[in-house]
Length: 469
Figure 1 (spheres, helix red, strand yellow):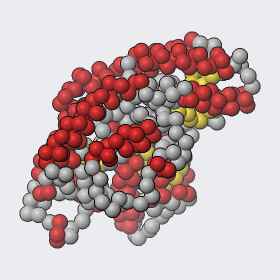
Figure 2 (figure 1 turned 45 degrees about the vertical axis):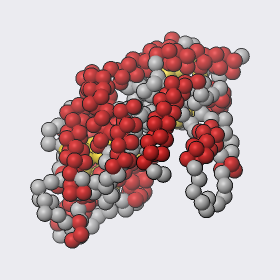
Figure 3 (figure 1 turned 90 degrees about the vertical axis):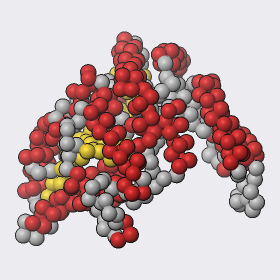
């Protein structure tokens, strides 16, 4: 493709995306696809000769696009949001165009220094302690693995200094923690059997006293407690673990304290939600995802550490071909995580923060929370429904409860969710809380307005009434 053709199709594709944003609300949130519908329309073998872009784009529109689930839909209430925004998309275009590789300062000075500045902006926006420094990882799962590896290295060095004793290392997380914790524990070599799930209270938050009991018990039994993972906004219910109490326990037992705030962390840009981070001064590492609730395209996960030296010691490498004359003066982010090669993710985040400003981002997050509280009130005031968890941010957990026996309610709510999603007018997902099947109403998409939340409630009421007749 020559430059003139690139320019032509570039304009065409930007126009298509702009049109998509205008009409996305008219599309079914989830496509009416069966497994194999897309694959069977694609050739089994790659083309021998190049094809014209017109034909490729036609196939995109006729084969690929009809099988897309629309995460940017204003009636997207499933999982958590994975937002984008026009400034972020334009920045991604520039990133792809300049095609830089950002493994060390020398390979792109602007990328390294912009990342340093933007991550400190985020630190200030969330109210994280001065002295915490940040780096962009691809996702919270990777950031958590980085924390687990750092904790392992710290604990291994500590035990090695204790006359060579190498005790089995243990990790602690609440029973409501994200699945990435277990995966990270396995990858990092702790062993699944050394992950301790700590009970939660009536709000589904970790019980600190139970954590300390587990740590003390493991020490007595010859284990070495290495890492505890707290959560600000669990996946099932956005429960908030008490960081202050957990952090105090971790500090007294020399345990690395990592906090997973993947979705809900963005809410801390609101002064009225800063309580969720009470005790963050005790934290060794912290992660949240601007690619969820801060209008930044996937992937962009902000990971902060108190002791950057501990992070660098875990991942640094000194091969001759990677050395540069300025290594002692700069941050080489190849040593701040698992990847050597790194994308220029800071650019889109910079575009977003500058385009919306802190106040603009706060306004969007505050509205999402207000609509969730409005939805929560509707649930509580309706005899057909039951609120299943507190609503600290913008996720509402509820279920249909018409008074039938508890054992029948799970099946009723499974059918309820299926019927709602089959309409194509909205998409919800489910979870399990204390063995109860629960629907999750997650409000956080950029294009969502109050009218979409009201329309969702009307549909929920209508389907529920028909189901329980």
